[in-house]
Length: 454
Image (cartoon, rainbow, N blue to C red; front, side, top):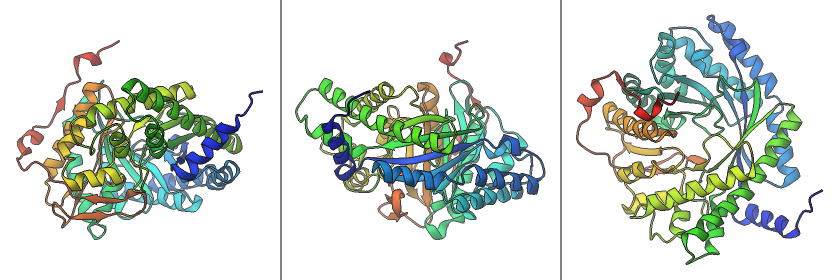
């Protein structure tokens, strides 16, 4: 039997009480393939019944584990099979009804969000998938906890530019229909390239078809812990910095695996993965930007930021995979602007631009996340931003994503307050030159040569 070191216990307590270490989410994945059909009322009933039965004890179990181990568990969530695979309908109104059934089930079991109002259209779009995509604005407007995602590209398939153009329109429609909340619906909508099947984080979580019937995935976060660790090695070279981050990520991942296995045992369903993503919050001391600044940058966004982020992301992954054989999801560093106090400060100061953020997404876990832009930004410009991120993901064989909010009525310099973990987004400028003709070409951008590996 392993001896538990007293110092390790004290260190963990300090991480939780002073350095913002938490379990960001316990997410139950639920396969809805057994609910599939073409009659919307029958499908909705099956979906509601299956989710409420499977996740009946999810919230209470997570809360019991939190109390027992003294670890804050911030969110309890559900991910389900992509909706476009469950309901066979070409009527968007049917998919809105399905979204409401998902929302009602989420409210019934008490989870914060339910992800999986999703479609995978990286190579083409079926009529059913088009109906689901067309339903997204109304679905996000008329539900409270439903999150939506669409995968428009992959390294193997290339980029479906018809889907990219469509998602530019959908983002704009979603912003407009939720304009009374500054376009809040867009905060629950993400457009992916190379999306993953076991991501526990919203808004991009869905339960992939390669997953088991039920599974528990845990997302851990600890930007504050990493920053505090780096404060102890000021002036040290980058080898020391990398080792320090790796060791810290190892400890954080261990805690995530403990919670995941305990939840799996109590709920009687398999443990899937631990996603070690440094997901920031607006709280002081819980910022990825501040980690980069601790490495020696005056402010996030200045020259050297991309290199610092590359080191951080790689070291986090290395520490995580040594701590658990089942590290998955995205695992690395997230750089959402509105959710990170340091990023907000950098944007407000003019140090961090949209172009610099795009460069940073080449080396981090996801992409342009929680970016607020002027409400007058065109659908084609939104689509072009999505296309650029998809290209980065496709070429670099990594997941990239865009969660962008064209805030109605807002201009550069304004702020949009979403509250809670979603924070406050400063409205950022976009390039004023037009990409319309580029987006309207349509078709598919072919997969890169290195995609052919069979």
